[in-house]
Length: 70
Image 1 (tube, rainbow, N blue to C red):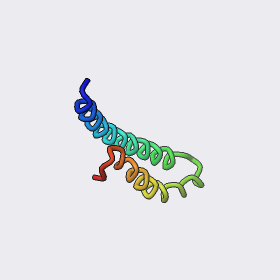
Image 2 (cartoon, rainbow, N blue to C red):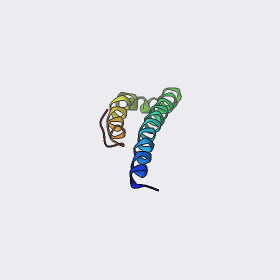
Image 3 (tube, rainbow, N blue to C red):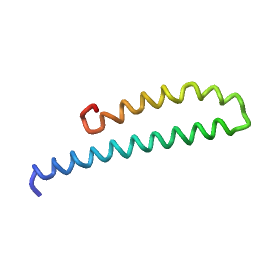
């Protein structure tokens, strides 16, 4: 396989890897929010305040998977 073709395939794959990872992060944080809100333990409700900031930080790293921000 030509090196040029390999690079094109790699870039295309990285684009999808970034998209799928971002969607997975969204899903995981939605599940965490449901679990925390529905639990009988009210102490874990404190975690709700850090979920969004933590998700934002993780998504910044996810955005760089393909080497390009945005």
